[in-house]
Length: 333
Ligand code: BTN
Image (cartoon, rainbow, N blue to C red; front, side, top):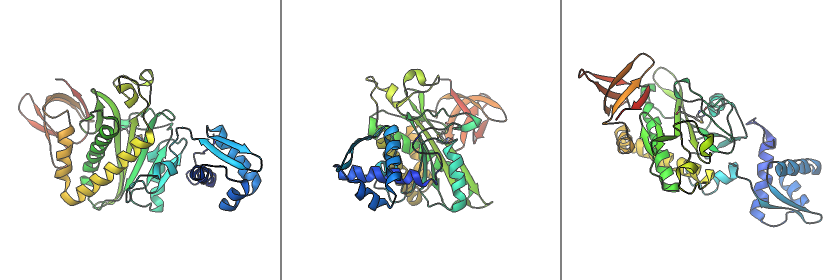
């Protein structure tokens, strides 16, 4: 494959630069011009061009004229994501991978180099995508969005749950803005369309006892998966529409990043309660009879509310109210 799974691979960057140059010029660009621009030998340019063609880029080569880019495949190239993104810090630094084990793993490794706040690790496919409660996140190539955002909020570790809620709210807002579908949230952060899961969020942290160093927010969103490729209870944006319309992953990603940045600034200005209010307006768990299974036990009862930390308050049939910070919820009615 063209783009390797090494985030520090120079080849990756050079190929993106070639595409960016050709894309901007829109006309033929001579070999000499590209070579001068990138400072690489002619032989190396030929290799890059061949490999770009292999990955689905339509590039015309005409002797004495040079190369012209006719079309790009449906890929999350950094230059395409960055263009028109218009955020201040979220998504301003992108590590793009054809495939990786999990974007969470890569983000965790990057943390040792103190990455900028807002950095994202973005992959076309994951071989070991992980979900909450030790589950696997199915991540087929070029079908969905799989990325991890690195944030550096100055908050104690116990306060990080609100960022997961913020991410779920942002995904719902972005889905609505781009597709028109009304997405909702099942506690804590499953994004649903027509009661089926289209996106999931996994948050991990690196922290000292009193202060968070990094929050890693992993988002998986089913975009163009066919219905038959999805697990039971899952949905993609494509399969949600009557016309089975394909959506631009880039457009959705950009909108999710914009919404996260807006909501993050909103959180800093207005506090957690303001984000939790937004979450409550989008959630479909509160008020329902639920069965909740946590690592320790199971309980059936009414989902009453979430508290300031994002914990779910459930009233059992005996009238006792219990708080759950994690767990799996089934809506009973
Ligand atoms: C869940 O609902 O269980 C959470 C799923 C989170 C999946 C995303 S995909 C990008 C990031 N990398 C992972 O390995 N997981 C998260």
